[in-house]
Amino acid sequence: MANLFDLLQGHMGDNVVDQLSNQIGGADRAQTATAAQSIVSTLLAGLAKNASTPEGAASLNNALERDHDGSLLDNLMGMLGGGGQAAAPAPEQSRALNGAGILNHILGPNQSGAIDMISKMSGLDSSKTGNLMTTLAPMVMSMLGQQKKQQGLDVAGIAGLLTNSVGQQKQAGNPLMDMATRFLDKDGDGSVMDDVAGMVGKGLLSKLFGGK
Image 1 (cartoon, one colour):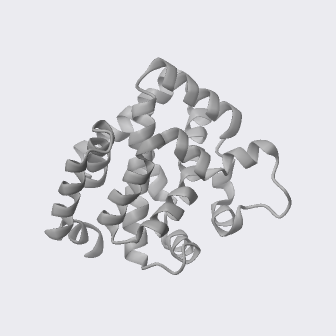
Image 2 (tube, rainbow, N blue to C red):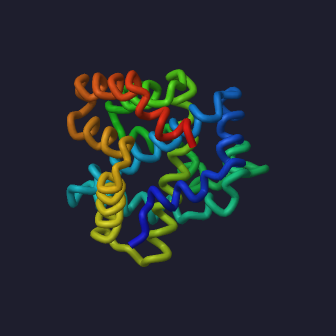
């Protein structure tokens, strides 16, 4: 089964990271790349948690059928550069591009804590992290919608795809996914933030992402 994290990473080449860095105000490229990976991990973990209940999985499936068919990925650079449209978008495209609304559904009250966590992980300031999260949220939902369409996934299939994607990343030793799931499982518990600070203090994240 496809791994959503790997699929999304495949869309984040040098040109996309440069575009993201410029869009949030000329941020450090390495910090932007680490923050983007952290955001993708956090959003996938949040989606998997939401889809772990029948009601949550059904709600997510309905949102995908209504608003997210994967077409945004056909012009990713256009989307990142300025919404991807020259004229006013159709209502369904407006919902597909509504990063703030998507984040509210995925993270709810944990959104501000997630931004703080990712800022500590990446070194990116919180305002830029928040902007980056709003930008990437439609991309994550579009990828999920694309896989639903291509694989013909039903409600249970979507939940399984998310659970497997998160589980594979944790088994592979992705510290960002591990931290994201712990953060969400504890509903933003402060002890997780202490762990993040410890990882940063020991230089673990910079070794993983800055030394390549």
